[in-house]
Length: 456
Figure 1 (cartoon, rainbow, N blue to C red):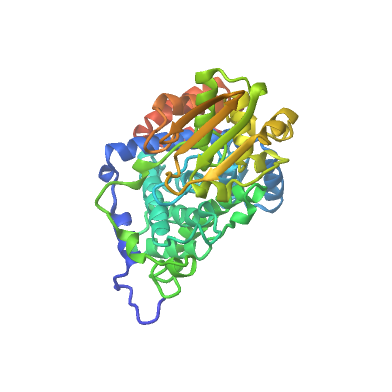
Figure 2 (cartoon, helix red, strand yellow; figure 1 turned 135 degrees about the horizontal axis):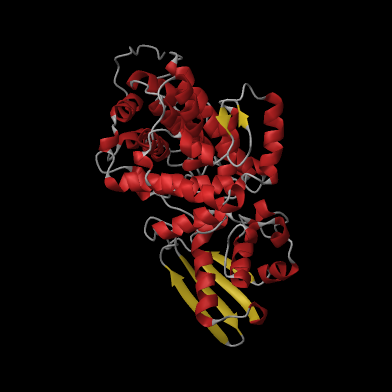
């Protein structure tokens, strides 16, 4: 425990955890509950779609070799793994296609893969040892974890700039707090869970475009489960993990803003502003994809006639999507040039457009050579301008807010259609429809095992 700090000490970290530990389902706003249902539906679809990816097969082969006793379901597989290994697999499969949700409210975080993968495993553990976990229990824990992850990011404004992958770092904290909430930790032990999680936080942007990028999400889920279970048994940590002299906000960021951890606590739940992806790639690419597809459809542009595609985006976009000549699908998810090219050729940017085959397609590669992108500080991160030149004609468009962002959200119908397209090939139409119906009424479900069983 911290020197000179008693268990009764008041700290910023403990203040947040006390608020989150006390939260009840009825404290969630109508909007927060709705976004929780949308988030669960979207995430399980993404996880099922990613469950057969070669990255996941490799991971599961190793996990089966090292895993403990089978306790928790691996989605999309006829398999159970240990209580830390199943969330590792499920968390990675949820993020491997880069199709999962993204919060962009000052922090770019894919919260659902680490949080929900951790919670799904703990649902099975809790039901086996105690009372079944209800859908309402899960929704509340999900919102609480989301709050902890984003708020921690606010406290460390230079965290992303330092090269950390926030889904690995903030995702670990989010998963630990969510897991602690689900198993009923009091404020003191939830503070410990946050500290245990934060000390495990890791994930480097250098691994973007490799199998390790989505591994960060899986590790975050597994780390979160471990943090919650250790804290439940009294395993302690600092009570100042965020604001301490060597706490998260100071050593993970060149600028520390620990006071932001509890800023605007009474102004709604952060899950209300979550975003969802219509495209299976880095979220910052979405506005330029919207722009190219809109021009293609509006002006009936034939890719073979195009001489130039010129893009104007926020400089942040170019800093993380600078792959010029991708040779794998994972690399292509972080290529401005590839995204513009496939958007023009296919009029889409889904799973198929970011495959190994598409990354190596000669037609797409040739079109990538006609794309230029420029940074403009005056633009928002979800904004883009595009110009496509055909002969002497310039086709131009402006996208103020990309589809799927909080300012331009996907409809419930679009979220549902995405889920059905992702889930049906893996678990079949009947199970997909039943899972969909359960999620839309998740707060009425008495036992999460019914839903989890449909996803195996």
